[in-house]
Image: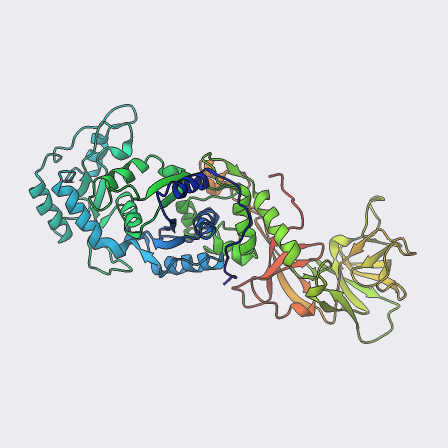
Amino acid sequence: MSDKVKADSVERPVNFIRNIINDDLANHKHQSITTRFPPEPNGYLHIGHAKSICLNFGLALDYQGKCNLRFDDTNPAKENLEYVESIKRDVAWLGFEWEGEPRYSSNYFDQFYAYAVELINKGLAYVCFLNAEETREYRGSLTEPGKDSPYRDTSPAENLALFEKMRAGGFKEGECVLRAKIDMASSFMCMRDPTLYRVRFEHHHQTGDKWCIYPMYDFAHCISDAIEGITHSLCTLEFQDNRRLYDWVLDNLDDFNKPDRPHQYEFSRLNLEYTVMSKRKLHQLVDDKLVEGWDDPRMPTISGMRRRGYTPAAMRDFAERIGISKVDSMTGMNILEAAVRDDLNVVAPRTMGVIDPVRVIIENYADSAPETIQAPMHPQNEAMGKREIFFGRELYIDRADFAEVAPDNKFQRLALDKEVRLRNAYIIKALRADKDADGNITTIYCTYDPETLGKNPADGRKVKGVIHFVEATKAVSAEFRIYDRLFTVPNPGKADDFESVLNPDSLVVKHGFVEPGLADAPVEVAYQFEREGYFCRDNKADSLVFNRTVALRETWNS
């Protein structure tokens, strides 16, 4: 779990939600603010949810208010405790604390039922027996008004008896629903007598088998907000039309028709390039085994990004960078990766790993034992201390760092009869190389200059480049998982078949070596493998596996 986020004095960028809150507090509409994060426990949270988490919890911190964690658990057919626990972990990992115990919409099922009865008694709700096809026909279209259900004028007394029968299990699933009586000619489809309750014979992870009718989200959500004293109910733009139903429900319930009742405000959802945010499509990726699971490091889930080595601070910074608006747009993956790099550049210890190794023999190194060298953990942060690296007769360097003949004068790596400096160690010169039957380099023979340890490359010796290495006898074998974009197009959700644009090279596995100090590297802690990128130890693998968090610089045109 990450360190908890604390309130600070940093001035936040102004946005329309902050302006609303500022006005409400100034006008004494509310004495303080209470927000909520209300996920459905039917999947793992993704980075779009992280934006909402940072917004709701961040506002509560900045305004010294409260933020509830409330599970919108009104559809037991798609929910389970695995998702509940994963959501708690993700919110806590991001550094936020919810007010009191986690809440559940199911905590209020008895109250929802009572409020439904109130609407029935007021003649504002009725039990409807139209089947699904008939309901679609009666609803009308965007250009044509709907038609009244033949059950719309049933008396309140009869509707109450029917609703009680629904609760008692007297009707089959799909046989009837409870609908609000609003306006079948409304220009807003959500106001054409929407469903408030439906029959579901499903075991609920919180209430067991007590209920066989469950409220719809639009009915439960606004009442849950009102019960909890939420002042500003923040949701994404797809719920903009539904705000009318949110208001209608609260306006017509005696307990909540008050000036300080909750109000809903909408902001743009996060759309991130080269990934999908639809929970249905994420489920499909998992169910079709196109990824390892919800926490696959290629997934946009918080757990996947955590496994990849993203930090809570980087995620919060990303949310701050993209801001809050009412305009939907596509956010570049480069913005997210820049936030990750900027954070890791400061906090990540340095080390060396050779991902595609080739052997190097230092022919003039006479000692039988390797030499110990002190290297900084971070070049700009002496407080992080030093680490031990080793230099000896046999080393590994990256295959891409050697060419028999330098391709041009800009080549700043090792070539025959050329010199390079080994990071934190000596200058070496390549003399010759062995090859296998296929022409692949197997061993490079070099000499080293024992007078160049710790010298600045510009201090009397002109060498064009610095490369990383690992001493062979102390090296620790490791697997490297090189992750890239999950899809080949910026907006895979627009594809007719989004699976057809999966990136076949989104995961490349390499086997190489790391410094011995990484043998017991903690999971989820990112290191900068010098010249290779940022990596963290995988949190699920039994062996030593490092996931690439992000490259050292942007490599995609995104």
